Length: 133
Image 1 (tube, one colour):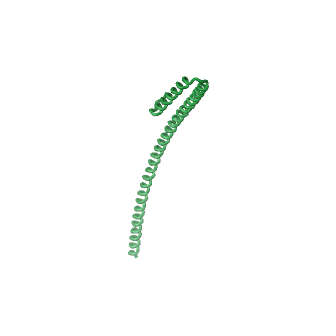
Image 2 (cartoon, helix red, strand yellow; image 1 turned 135 degrees about the horizontal axis):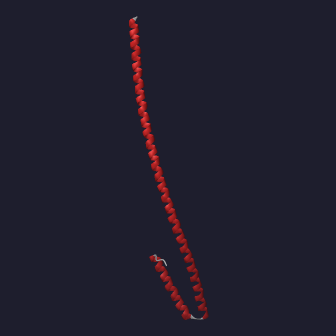
Image 3 (cartoon, helix red, strand yellow; image 1 turned 90 degrees about the vertical axis):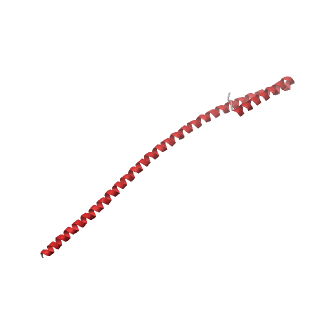
């Protein structure tokens, strides 16, 4: 009978030790998994912050490019307005030249045509070299 108690006690202690080892191994695995998950979350936070910074930088670049294009567009519109005014002046000058021709002043008409040709040559040269007035 005592042997039964001893065997039962040894079995109980052995079972307790095995359960303790299983629990300890389980806790170690859980701690390792928890630490791994925390590391993963930290790396995700860092990636998110990096992407937000990059996104802000791209947005700032986009805004500066848009401002530059708006400025260039306004310059182009101003240049178009000047060109339209010059075209109107040229048309008026041509009409005056035609009127002089009709009046019978061919010398003045010839001089006016040479002047127009010289002005056109100057305008072409300025356009080729990119010189602004």
